Image 1: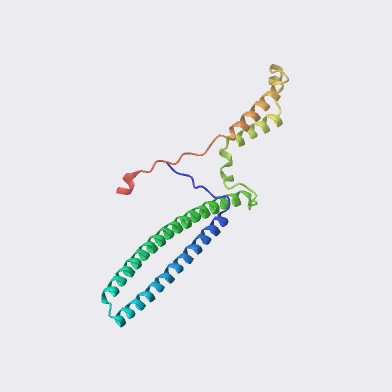
Image 2: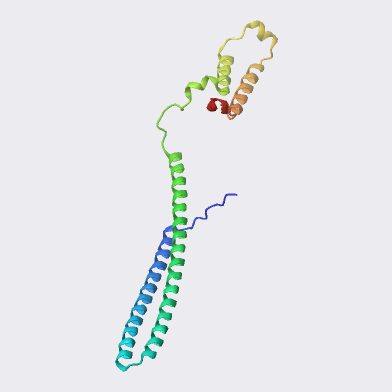
Amino acid sequence: MTSKVKRPARPLAQLNRVERHIKKQVQMSNIIERLHAEHNEQLDFTHEQALKEGYSAGRLKGENELANQKSTLEKAHRKQMLEQSLAHKASVSTLKNEIDFLSSVNAKDASFFEPQQKFLVENWRHGWKWISTWAFGLITVAATVPIPPEVLAVLPDHIRLAVIAGIAISGGILRFVNQSKPLPPADDNKGAA
C-alpha cells in the first residue's frame, strides 16, 4: 500500500522552524561544552590543591566525581546530538520528497499550460484509420453526392437528414473510443535464443 506524502501548507516555514530548532540545539551543545571545560578547570584546580595540601584521597574522590559527571554529560550530549541528527535527517528527507513531488506536479502542470508548438497533432499520419474521420467522410459524401431520382422516389424526404445526423452522432461518440492497437506481448524465447 502506498502512502501519500503529506505536504505541509508551507514547506519553507517548516524548514525555518527546523533550522531554529537546530540553532537551539547548537546553543545547548555550546553550553554543555562550556560546562565541560569549567569542570575540567575545577578538576585541575582540585588536583593542584590536593597536591599542595597532600590530600590524595580528596583528589581521587574529586577526580572520580568529575569523571562521573563528565561521562554523564558526554552520554547526554551524544544522545541529544543523535536524536537531533535523526530528526534533522527525517525532516530533510521529508522536505526533499515534498520538493520532488511539487516539482513533478509543476512539470506536469507546465506542460499542460504550454502553448502548442505544432499545428497538427503528432499522429496525424494515422488519421485515415480513425473512426471519426470515416464518419465525417460519409457525412460529406451523403451531403454532396446527388442521389439518383429512382432512389429518391423510394425514400421519404427526411431520410437523408436522418442518415447524416446519425452518422454525425456516431462519429462524435466513436471519437472517444480508444483506437490504438495493444502492444504485442513480450516473447521471452527471443531474448533467450
